[in-house]
Image (cartoon, rainbow over all chains, first blue to last red; front, side, top):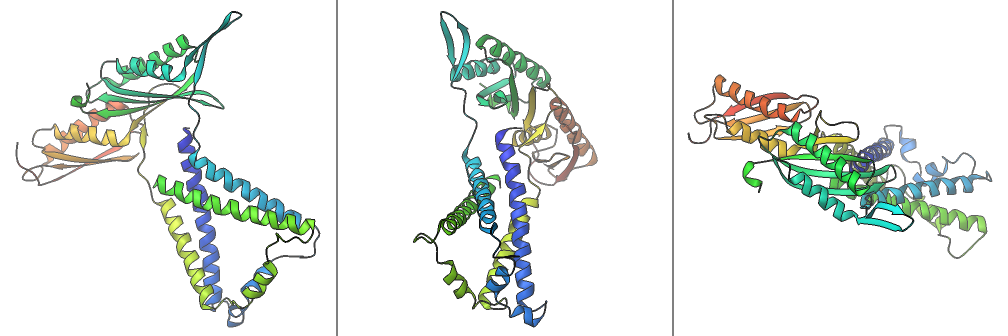
Length: 191
Length: 177
């Protein structure tokens, strides 16, 4: 799954849970305050009720437990914030060959350019954009490929896979997982 | 919607982090002994004693929390337009998708290519593709079938999975070509 999609899914679940919690807390306060649970309970002090939730205020481990929980929540909160702006880094260099006499490296952008040029040469395709990133599970190529209306889609995909495999073999990219986004365009948009 | 969620996530995440760190700070200060850095929470609690569940401020706060919660829930459960549709081609190491807005425009072009159709608008979802075509004088059954066929042929090229249902409607609009 692409990094952005995973973040979007997490956001959706987390915000849904948060929304349900806020709705439950707000509804409870409304119900209690409007006297549905009895006039006596509606006139209770809010702070007193909340403090009454602590089972044993004198329990010696209470501060440590509250502190640990708060630390966990703070770490989760920080991770949630950073996930919104953090993207997998682009591959800066690719090692083609490594011998006793030295190392041959290719810039990641040069590999991306080479692959996109290869892809754009496939009949029926238009513009091609390639982004190669390094993720913990290995290298990944995110490709956006324009295809014209009457192009042979299956043939283009086959050629694109071959081009990617050739590029990864020649440049030493190794095993690359790829995500190809086909963008249909009108014939006149393709140069 | 995704960007709104990202902003909301950043705001709530930051609020969670700040609150958590403040509590950690306070607990640490309590455990290490009285220090000037401690927050005056005892006096806060005393000042909050005046607030009852039925006081106006608490009721307004409760209504606000409920409203924010309901809006958040509604925003998450509303079905969203997919960014892309899956394609049943490629192999395990290569994920192939077709861009949804691009596919919608391609299908609209395919529908517009049918004789008698002057314009088309397509909405693509994972399981259903809805196309509205403009036919001067209103569309007949033959036009709808021709458009439906053109859409099916265009879709077959992309091998979209799962195969969506195609629905065509027509409206009397535009001038005959």
